[in-house]
Image 1: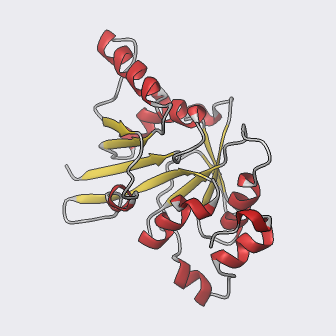
Image 2: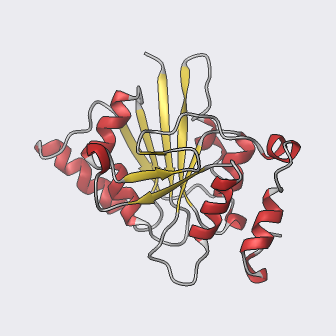
Amino acid sequence: MPQRVCFVTIGATAAFNQLLQAVLDSLFLRTLQASGYTKLLLQYGKDGHSILEAFRAEVASGEADDYGIDISGFDFNKMGLGQEMSSVKAAEDRTEGVVISHAGNPGSGSILDAMRIDVPLIAVPNTSLLHNHQVDLAEELARQGYLVHGRLESVRLYGLPFLLIVSPAKTSVAIYQQRSPSLTSSAERGRPGLRRIMVLILPAEVWPV
C-alpha cells in the first residue's frame, strides 16, 4: 500500500490547540483512513506535546482509535519544514497528500514553503488571536486560487471532521485533493503575486521582507 501523508503545522510561536484537537478527532482520522492516508505528522509547537500524549494514552486504554494511521509529532524544526512538506508530494511509493497549516503571518514561511514546494494546502486561521489578519489572508489567497481556506467549526457537517473547507468553488469537509497552483502558474494566469496580495491585506509592520 503506498504511503500518503497529512502534515499539520501550527507554527513556532502561538499555540493552536483547537487545530491539533480537531485533527486528532476520531471522525477526522476516520476520514483520513477512508481517503487512503497512512501517516499524520504534527508540528505541534511548544505547548502541543501534551495533546498528542493524551491522545496516545486514550488509544492505549482503548478510549480512542488511531484507525491504523501512523501518528507522530515534534515541536519545531529549526532547519525549516521543507523536508516534512516534501513528504506530502507524490513519489514512486507515495500518493500525494496534503498540508494543513495555520494561516499566520506569511513572513514566518509556512504558507510560502508549501506553495514553493507545490503541495495541496489548507490554511486554517487561528481566530483566538487578537489583532491578526489570518482570516483576511486565508480568504484572499483562497479567492486567488493559491490554497483552500479552512475553518474550525463546533458543528460537524455531514458527520465528518471539524475542519470545514471553504472555497469559491465548493463547500466541503472532504480532504482536499486538488493541486494548488504554484506562485508562477498563478502569476502567469493574471493573478496578483503573493507579495502583492499581502501588501493589500496586511499592515506594513507585518509585511515579509
